Length: 176
Image 1 (cartoon, rainbow, N blue to C red):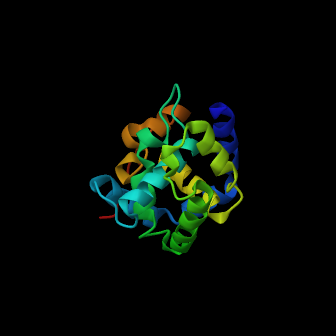
Image 2 (image 1 turned 60 degrees about the horizontal axis):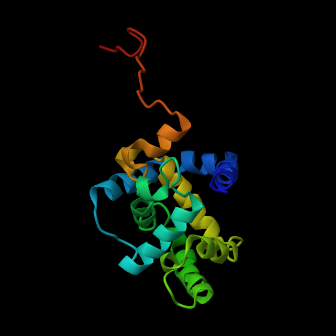
């Protein structure tokens, strides 16, 4: 089942999201860079962070390969909400209420995995779930030095080579 969810998520991460990432890259870089250096949360309370982390673990689960937990996407998401994604704060605030109503006030992570998936399926068409999904994928594949994608686990899964072996043509930029 997780392979199917991953395929669905990766296909959903299409041209629109890619264009948005390109347009917001400087802010994304700054947010992610600070997230990696921090061990605490700037937007979330600890219980809220645990809820988003539990959601991210179901959105991009760990199986034979690392998932959102190992990529530490929670830190990327947290800092994104106080930098380049400030406009999404209200979606998260409202979403915590929606999720709490579905779980009866119990933490999502306290339910067995199959119940977590069922609960999240009940909110999968909400702006909250869609935003958490998008932020999870961004955190999974962002540059590690900028937060998320801890130890390049996302890049390893897609075979991304980050060696950056670019060399400018000799003399092309020489202006004395």
